[in-house]
Image (cartoon, rainbow, N blue to C red):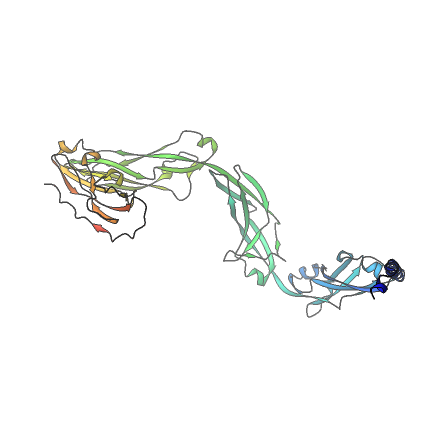
Amino acid sequence: MKNKITTNLFLKILSVVVAFLFWLVIINVTDPTMAKTFRNIPVKILNENVITSANQVYEIESGDTVNVTVKGKRSFVEKLTSADFTATADLSELSKVNAVGIAVQLKKQSRSGVDVEWGNAVLKVNLEQRETKKFRVEVVHEGELSENYVLGNIVAQPNIVEVSCGESKFKKIDHVGVMVSLNGESEDFEKRYKPILYNEDGEVIDSSNVTFSNDTIKVSTQVLATKEIPLYVEAKGKPASGYRLVGTDFRPETIQVYGSKEVLGKTISIKIPVSVAGAKKDVEREIRLDRYLPAGLSTVSDMTTVSVRCQIEKNGSRSFVMTPSDVAVKNLPSNYTMEFEDESIKYSVVVTGKEEDLSDLVLNDLGAYVDLRGLSLGIHTLEVRYNLPDGVKLKNGARVRVILRNQTGASETPPPATLIPSAPPEE
């Protein structure tokens, strides 16, 4: 059996090849008929003016594309593409049910003729009365400018556009806007943008079959440099007799402003006067910054005021503002580390005494400290203790919360916070 298969093997293979080539010749000579379908060919609308002249608009319900089947000689059909067909729908022939037949034409011609079929496809539309209204153009933006720059004035031209569309879509329109894209600009720029329709939720509405009085809106965008400048508060006048000004605290201490590069190039600071004349208690004010800004500058963001507190005390007492960094630590176990729970918190400490004993007193003279003797790992609330100079007494002190940890960093569940009773004021 094996010998029969292998005998004259070359001649057998050659005969198969010759037979295949002979078949190809016959196919190409006879050029058989074949069918091919081209899908989703777009339908072009004709005579739209028939609708618009009646003050109407249309929305396509179905039939905006059509499938076409072509039958013809293989040599011709195989070379066709979707671009060789033109599909149209003439709205001047619209029926009472708002439908019109689609016409398809083949741009190329075949000597042997072809059949083009599209199944009597039709285009259906919905008709509505056209409504027209004017809207103010609202400019929104996305993206970021270069660092240390902010947006100035943004002007749209025109700032009012007329919109025409069907009544059902018209009911959804809340406003017209343009979207300005920011891409690291550091200078003023001007671009044109297409108007966008928005509903009351800020969602974009499809603008198909909508007519705008202006196809594009020119937007001029001002880009302004920013700068951080210091604030200074100056107390004016004298407190009431028997009282004195202890100190002035204010926040923020710096503000960020924007303006022209020429103005920002100058050395700028803001000094704000606060009157304490006749005061017998602390003077607290919220002062508007715009009253003291140099011409051509404005504040960035919502920082429009400065909070000021002028501390007034009666002679014979002194108060100090203390932070944890002003408190010394005593008797910390060697295998522990300690930190304050809030390093930024501030405390008010009041002492009393004779005027001559208080006049030159400074914060370090209070000798504030906390004693950690006998404390375990965890969070503790401690009364701050003091080594006061002779003749000076504590009127009210402060408490701090401290955290004790194992020096190796081992994690342990901290016990409940404990409070060390405060020492009574010195007599």
